[in-house]
Image (tube, rainbow, N blue to C red):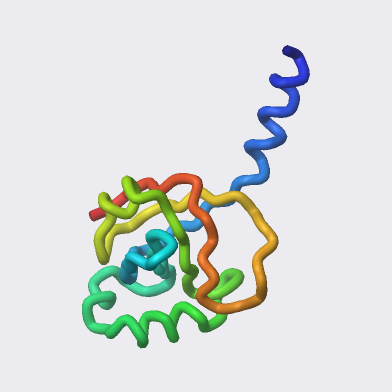
Length: 114
């Protein structure tokens, strides 16, 4: 029992958070995916086509990484999000191929702004 209490906090530390706006969502044959972008004001999201948002998301961010990322999620999370909402995605760090658009599996999706 003591091992569980020691290991549980360590497991929790391997999760990361990504905060941004829902740029667009897609139902794919193998699941549900959303592009989440940062460094783009919410009001500007509606001015861009999905292909332009994808290109914006691929550009290097001023803080770290890129301006966006694709996240796969459960159907219940997918059904509650919509374009323009500000969200925090919790995900487990994972080794993924260096391929743009490869979705990271979201552990949870929290809406923090409409």
